[in-house]
Image 1 (tube, helix red, strand yellow):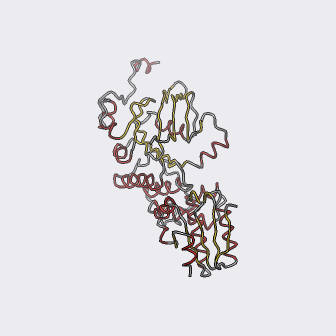
Image 2 (cartoon, each protein chain N blue to C red):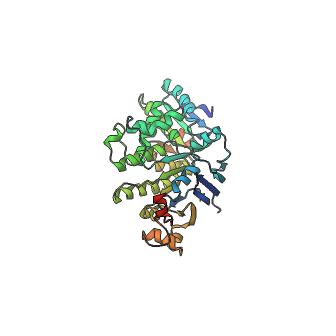
Image 3 (cartoon, rainbow over the protein chains, first blue to last red):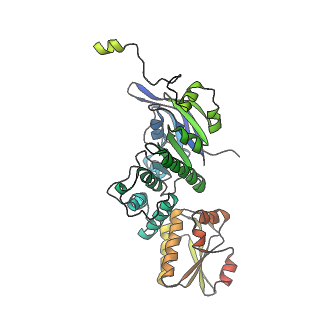
Length: 265
Length: 111
């Protein structure tokens, strides 16, 4: 059976001033997949994420989200699309002045006509899914980093999104908590049939959660394929990234010949 | 309103048509609120025309059950598609609700 494409990028180019951040990215994400976008710092992966969620528009190229061309959607269409996606941010982005329950219920209070009693039940159901039922009345400051991320995840799935975007979900977490978050992403994807897009540079995460992987480097897709295909890739840059070697085709410093001239300019 | 009420054998059968989601749940809740205000003792909800239930739909049903229990009312769900039945299982709600395969059986055995 042919898989349904829920996100499609066609030759996406974005420049910030003189710098080309995205240099012709094309890829497809299938419904129900956990799709990982990996790459080093500054490779353009977070900028690309902001394009496929509609936060930024490309200079050229096309992006289709759930069949809608994001370069041409009206504000109303974008609002409707936003209700179908959930965002899980690197910092969890919780409101510190609100309780855990209020944070999770925020999208429901803002975007629906559901009554309080029903919303409270949805919140309990979502917190149960992330293993935090009973924590409704705590403040974010009373939680650990991993728990805050789980609250962020509960909020991201509050509206039953079709797609959840995760920006560096395991950054700053110890390996065990990172593993818990990875397992949660997998469980939620399979149980709730959610398509997950995960931006990360955590190689352990990549291979434990990904159905398919795209590796970005200097604003381009270096390789895209299943986890196994990426692991077996002959591309030296991909292998360098997987092994974490400082030596190889990927340059970690922008070496320029005009250094001395630049100093005395 | 995608909800039709029918009286059969001294109980109320609710036929819901379409999706029970964020958009339709508030209206469906209001229809149930009227039955609850009358302290309807036995309610059967027929899901044969329900194509999809989201979290807000499940939460609405939980709230209805909760409110009915306050006066000793009972709620029974019937004709769930395999997809919707598995949703109740995933969310562990199949143990909370009284789920019966067919409407006829749900009515005839509702003592």
